[in-house]
Each structure stands twice: as C-alpha cells, then as structure tokens.
Image (tube, rainbow, N blue to C red; front, side, top):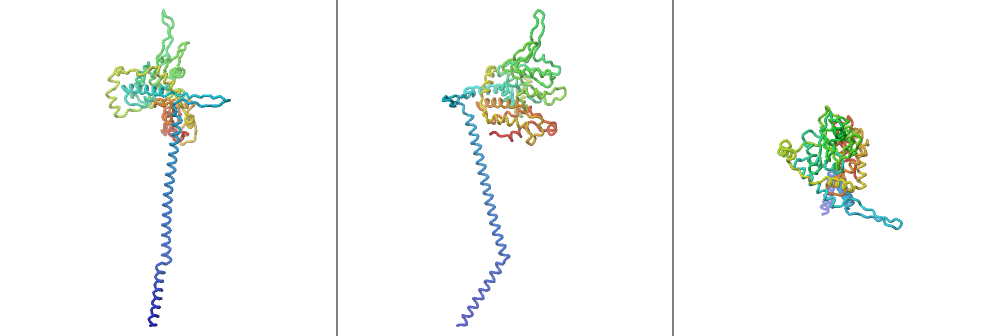
Length: 425
C-alpha cells in the first residue's frame, strides 16, 4: 500500500515537472517579447486612433465656432445696416439733450428708385439682348453722376446699349465718331460770323444729356482733352463765354482693344476721369441666336419703339438718393484698405504693379457701392456691394509694369488677390 502511495507521489511530481517544463518552453523569452510587442503595438494603434478622432472632433468644433462667429458678425452688420428708421440718440450736454438724425433715404424712396431702374432695364431689353453686366454698369455710372469707358471688339452693341438707355430715360443723345483729324471745336462748338446777323455761337454735339464718344482713342490728345474738360467741369468754353452742359450729363466712351495703328491711347490721367471701365464680351450662344432675329441691320432703331419710362428729373432725383445711402464706418475702412493695398509691396504679385490707385479710386468705390445698394433695393451698403463694383473702378487705375504684360498678368487678377487678402472688420 505504501509502495503505491510512493509511486503516486513520484508520478505527480513528474507530471508537475513536465507541466513546468512545457510552460517554460511555451513561454520562452522570445515568445514573451513578441507577445509584449504585439500588445504594445495594439495599445499604440488604439492610442493613435483615439488621438486622430479627438483631432477630428476638435477641428470640427473649431470650424463650427468659426461659422457661428461669422454668422454672428454678419447678423451684427445686417442689424446695424438695416435700421431704416430715423434714429435719434440722446446726448446729455449741460443738462440738455441733443438729437442726431440719420439722413439715409426712406423705404418709399428706395422702393420707387428700384422700381424705376427695373422698368428702365425691362424697356432696354426690347432692343438689347443679354449684356446684363454692361447694362447694370451703365445704369450705376448714371446714378453716380459719372462717366463710363467701355472696351470691346466691334459689333457687340456698345453704341446700341447707350442709345437704348437714353431712349428709355427720355434723355437727348448725341453720337461723336472720333477720327484722327477731329478738332476740339467739332465737339464743343464754335463762334461764327454770319452776314446781317453778326457773331453767333453754334453749339457742338457735347450739348446733350447722353454723349456717345465712339472710339475715343482715335482722336488726338487735344481733342480728347476738350471732351474731358466737359466731363469734369460740366461746362465748356466757346470763344470767351462759358456754357453749362445739360443735367443729367453722361458720357459713354468706347475704345477698340484690337486697334494699335493710328490711335492715341488715353493718358492715365484722362482714363482716371472715368468712374468705370467695363469690358464687354461676346454674347452667349442662345443670346446670339436671338440677336440674329432682332438685329439692327434688318430694322432701324426707331422701329423698336422704345418708350421713356422715366424722365431726366427722375435721374437727377435718384442721383441725390444715392448720395444719402448709408455706408458704415467699417466698410469705409474696408474700401480704404483695398485701395491702400494696391500701393503696397507686400503681396505675391505686387511686383507687377508700377503705380497703385489714387484717392479718386476710394471715392469711386464709395459712391459706386451706394449706387449698387440702391439698385438692389437697399438704403445701406453691404461688403458684397463693394466687392461687386471694385473691379470696374480699379481696373483702369492700376498701372501695371511691362513685365506684367509679358507674363499676361491682368489687373483683374491683381484685384482678386487683394480682395482675398483684405477682409472687412
């Protein structure tokens, strides 16, 4: 009996030794290290995954906060601009209350002006197909009591656009076809002597509400200057007498970009007299199909029977309303920063700008953004109005270097870069 018990103990001990040996072999140092590395690797992957997820959540949170801040800022701007009622602020001075009134136009005035503009555009559409951007630019120039330079190839309805605008607004219109032998007196008029009558003044074609200066770059500088004087001063001198020009007085000058022989390009100082430089392009395919049916070659302009939907007095009144449209201090600073940036040397393509825009550009953006706001039916200016007009105002005021011409850097690309950099506060 004791022998069996002894054998059992030996057998049990042997089994324990074998089991221990098996475990030691199974979990050798190499195997343990591999298992530990795998565990560490798994833990690291889990940690990195959690970190990436946390970064994604953090980015999403920051993006949402930024969007909320932008919406809050825009809402704040809108709430500040949309106050159409006359506001009164009490200022206590020595026990007295001083009232400060808001001078912006009322809702009724703005609505009537916007309706007149829409009627004007609708009437012009009877003869002019497409070219909405040019039509808006011409109307804005008229509302600003300024002048517009239009550049485009022949045959795309530059002259037709201004004729349609004049006919729809009940204004007189004269067309001057500029040539190399034209004299200043051909524009402003002359003093002549007639037997039995004596000396008399014969007024030139500049005495009209709307003047079309066709291919202005064909005339010599002296003749160009005669027109510029009338544009700037709204009066001309014939002999020894001065004569005021009609009110409203609006000049749309055209120039052909493909002409380079026998032309006199406008000097920078004269180009600066125009509020806008509009680039008129080719019509779209659907528009050109319609143009073939309703074209000026087969029908005379008078056959379109355009009716005056507004009067010259309405235009003068709308010009006064434009001046009263509200423009916030932050937007004024935004305009100044844009113009200042054209003179700076701290952006990527600044090397291509020889001379930046003058303060006249700031004035132009200031009044043009007001006109655009009125056309949109508002009595306050938004940053979008500034961005809309800034290309037309600055395009001809940026003097680019020869290097820019060689590398085909356009003024519009410089303006876009500036708008991307400068932000409204």
